[in-house]
Image 1 (cartoon, one colour):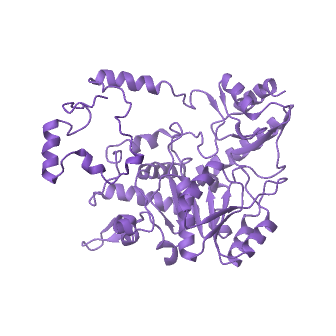
Image 2 (image 1 turned 120 degrees about the vertical axis):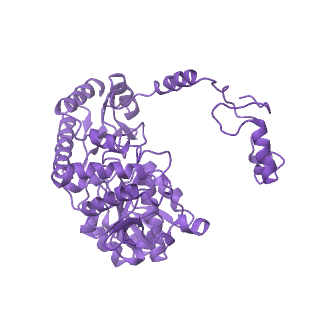
Image 3 (image 1 turned 90 degrees about the horizontal axis):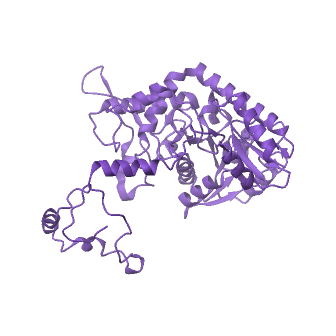
Length: 459
């Protein structure tokens, strides 16, 4: 990009030199460099960014963007068995119709307090999520499920005044990395290894860790990163509470039509990602995180994110929608806030609300049953492939599951060969171990095609 002082960028406002100079004079700055004076010289680039010249016409820009987008391959163009936090699900057309309406689709959530349509839509989402999770309080979505887990654990730390966090179930490596980064330096994360034979929580090992004291929270995923719905989940709650810790459970909300919600087996805070609820994968994006608790002051006071509720107006008998306890949020406290939570995922909350309203209790039950059945069939079918073992016996799995390759080829090699056949899957979790995922979008024929391809590849 040219560094000429006279350059006017076609897509950057106020880049006309005379306009820029007038703005500098208005605030008493000599140059743009004045704004960066606090940045140490050692971490500055000291040269222009290596960017191409600006495209000066809309036609050129459109062509350039289309060329970039053409490099992507959507999971709708191939047969995908990728999961591990971002899942292939059917998104009903009505969800896209609603979230693309101009009332909701904006570049930023905005702060128009007269906009009760948006506030009501998010309140409806919160209400349906609360019913699904069997709690009273659910937040406006944060960025993703990883952040929701990190925030939930920081909330537990503030409530208990303690430092340690114990992870009791198998956890995705990327999720663990994000949580570690988010809760430091206030909290230390200890991962308690699961039982290698069953893939479930090691209760004896957890009990020993809890005996050391200073545990703010015990964290569990339901299902775990292995796809296992751990039968020990209720016992984890008992151990956590006996040690004076809170119990935080990350869950896939799409399981809750067929599985008990975390609140039913003792969770103080539930969290997770609403991507399975009518949100497109969007090339790895399309995520938004929820946090849910009972209506208890010590818990609600620690939410850093927005909560919408009903409030009476000046007109008798009329109600409106607005922020609940806004004074506790980073929006009100700014730099004094407990932590900072942005607004980028609110639109996904509206989409999830539309999805939940469309599905209803019966629809959620049916889709949950379908995924359980597809997961069981996929595990059974792949176990029949020579050179593949499907571990963890009869443990209940939902969507995600693990396979082991015993024929000598690595998981990375097998993944590459599947990709050549137009099949995405086999996410390596070890040199000879990989994760697959099935949902309601996969048919028996799809699973059989995967098995047939693996029979050719796995030697």
